[in-house]
Structures are given as structure tokens and as C-alpha cells.
Image (cartoon, rainbow, N blue to C red; front, side, top):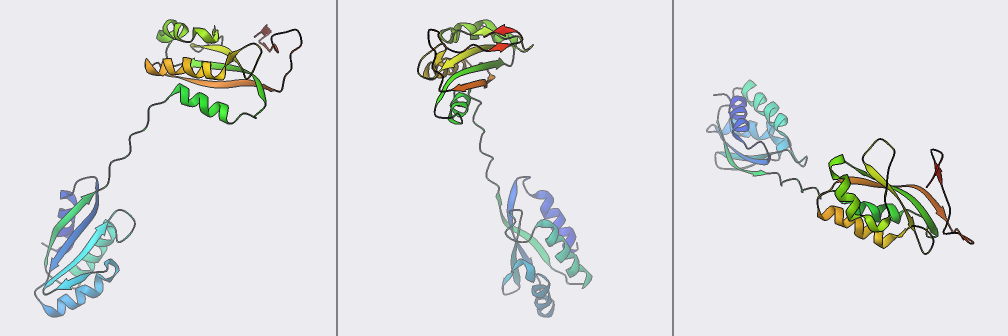
Length: 214
């Protein structure tokens, strides 16, 4: 079997997740062995006696499988015969598991980008399924949710920074954490925000959405 075919067979035998493959090429003829070292130079080969060792990698730090294929074809073209074997291989580390979506974490991120003097927020909580409406309404009752009219299952609620109408940021987070604990998925977002408001004789600003006060 020619060397390029030997490499193809080795590559097919590797785990699909392989990252590095250490190879050994045994060549009896000294002249051919010397020429093979020259042709395999891009792989940085080493040799001991009749055996040449080099490595194929998919990590980008050395020669890849296609480069090995080209080099072994060059050896075949010059009628250099030998036995190519796999010495060892390593798999790529598994991909890190993605953390599950968290409404509480999304709330933290939304608050983090607001100006320090924010005072009033109009927010929306969109659920992925209307099956969760009743249970979610119970769990977030302390933030006075109002069922939204966006056509998507969810609620609208208000938050206040230090005073006025709306739930405190910490209370909003606790309510969203309850949804996380029960595996109720969704998305929370700030729709409107005001800063440094000073209500006089009122509980705070009023927004009009679709002609309705919210």
C-alpha cells in the first residue's frame, strides 16, 4: 500500500474528535530515508535508526491532515516505500457546557448598563410559552405584573430605584430567580427608562403605551 493510502487509512481510523496524531514512518533504504526527511521537513520530523517520527495536528500549531496527505503523495511520486503507523493520538477537549439561561442574570445585565441616576423603568417579561402564564403570575406577584398586549405571552411591570411607583430592583431579581428555580424560561428587557425624576404629589411618572397609561 502506498504511503498516501496508508495515511488515509490511519485518518479514517481516528476518533472524529482527534486533535493530534503522532506518526512513525519506517524506511529500510538509507538513501530513501534521507530524502523522506527532506520532503517531510514542514512537519519537523525526527528520526532514530530506520524510523522517522512526525505529527499531524488539527490545532493549527503544525501540519494538518491535508499537508500530510500532500507530503505522502510526494513520497509516493519518488517511489519511496515504507510503513506508516499511528503511534498515538489525542482528542480535542470537550466543548464547555453552556450555562442555562437565567432571567435573574439577564436582569443584572440590564441594570448594569443603566446610568447611575436611573429612577424609573418600564420593563417586559416575555415567556416562551403561554403554559407558564398562571404560574409565572403567581411567582412574580410582588412586582405587580400586568399581562402584556404584545401578542406574546408575558407581562409588563415597573421598577423604581429609590422611591416612587414600581418594585425595587432587588425584589425584581428575587421574583425572576423564582422563575429560574422552576425552570420557566423567558426574556426580560427594559423598555423605557427615566433618570433623576422627582415626583411631587404623585407616585411617579406615567407612560402612555398604545394610548394606555402604564
